[in-house]
Length: 127
Image (cartoon, rainbow, N blue to C red; front, side, top):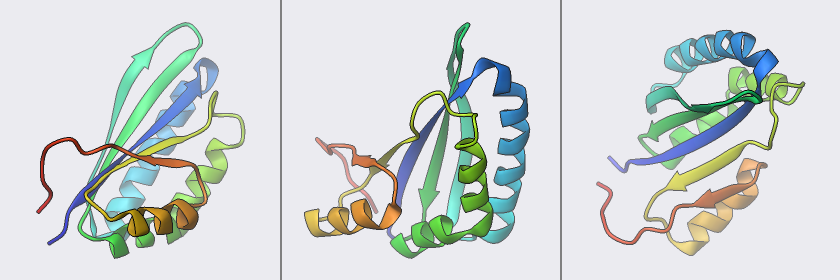
């Protein structure tokens, strides 16, 4: 198995937080039902202030194919469309943690269709 993970940060307007959490619960359920290669899919609230809240999705994938299945999932695409309809107070931020080659990273920079960054691996390993 070749694991890697991503973090997706969603910054949400304060007045949309409650509705957003309901949407998040639903997309979490759909991902669990439809994506066996998405091994971990958890959301945490990173911070909150008088303007809104920042949420982090941590997602561990079994393979690059599993990531592609996630991106192609009609439920995920609908979720992102909803977020872009007034929920987000800043652009979605996606950071992938992996030990991929530069060619593999470039493929995903183009394939995802949203801005992503790759966390610089200083030490560590992936199995």
